[in-house]
Image 1 (spheres, rainbow over the protein chains, first blue to last red):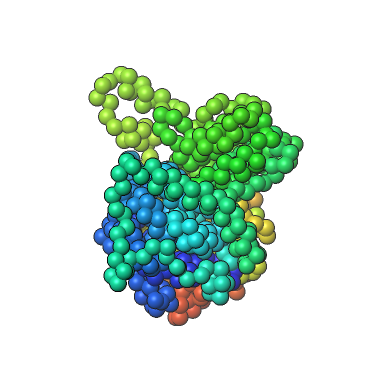
Image 2: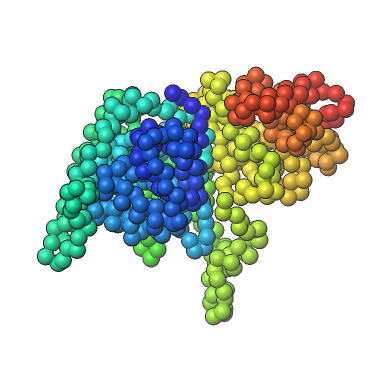
Length: 418
Length: 193
């Protein structure tokens, strides 16, 4: 049923339709509304049988999810930012153990300095953990991806992270067509674990593996992710057949057929990018968009097919590897090796900085004229940066940059974390 | 696309107002998107929320920077926040106050925007009258419906009743109707704009 609903609520309702048996989470902005709503549904008996386990930290949340999943329960949790970092060890363990946990990541920047707003730094921090990472463009897709995520996770025995932009999606109220129970039940069969902890038939999982076999175990994990590259589009097609909606898949293209410049991005910024591309199209420029839904596994072949005909590719991403440059851009460059594509990296939207259509239109205007450098920070306030650089040159004891920059800007500090 | 920016303070239902407006538009078969200015939602702090209404898919995720209407829930923000930034030259301004634009020192707005698009509404007083709490958001949505005709009063009232259960919803819906009437049939007592 189509409802005007908050993104977090849409995800919570959809997760409930997936019949998780154990939900464990620790609240952190901007994930909180999701978990509150799931908790209420469990308490009211609308989601049953399901145990909602209050835990004292994110480390415990993922550890409980691991225990629950290993005993054969469908397990769900959600987190963001510092919470993800706090559960990092268990995040790797969940993947290493091959446990099909589904987790919502309400994407948020990582401190210091403290910042509760959206970017993709948290997802990038666990890029190599062995989790599948799917990025939602809209709240409709965020909701739909959760159903596909449980199916994918349980088919392959790999945990899946559904990434949705914190606040921008989680707190946005918009139309979402919620599935009904029968449709979800038909699409998502009961969890049949590949391995299960059972006191009647004791086994060990997570045993020590030495140099003689660790490489092979890791390679097998890689093969499962490569398998996912085949399963993700199939599951998306089956989902489309069942619901009439095209959510998920590996990559999605927009006006790329004759494009000479293609913008690559992930998540909710794709909407604003498409609006900006339409404006430049009206001005006669050949420009298109490729949205990447599956970041891990990275769909190199699909990316190459979507991009290789374009002379120029501009990767707009909400994260970067400090001291290097774009993370997504590096993966895109790998996928395009051997082609003549010129790749431009644009870092944008860090810590919740609004990515405006106006800035994007200017960026694309420059891009189509070949005026972009290799790495650009969109809307960087150069004056503020220069003042801090001068201060650092002038005195050894120049103090913390974050506080200095805030003082230069003369803006009130935001101290609230609710 | 019609874009609305709502300014107020934490605790006044600024975020809720945008959400209710979006639900009302949705109920009338339109596409709508509501979202808060994120993070600073603590009691008393300046808060901004946004609502977009359109007849086609709304893809953009940027904050509303060029609104077609601005709703000011708390008049004490006037000297603190750039309330009218980016407002369309034919935009609407709705301020929650029992005073006039002149009394607020905002008479210069008459030269920048169509006079009939600028109204004040004593929404807090209306709220106090109807449910004894100084929460002006529902009443202001009624006034917004009367001012802009972007949404009907009945859709606003339905969305209010959907959001607030029972008697609270009824009284907020009544407050919306009262504020609607104030703007539709201005009297010297309420609107001196």
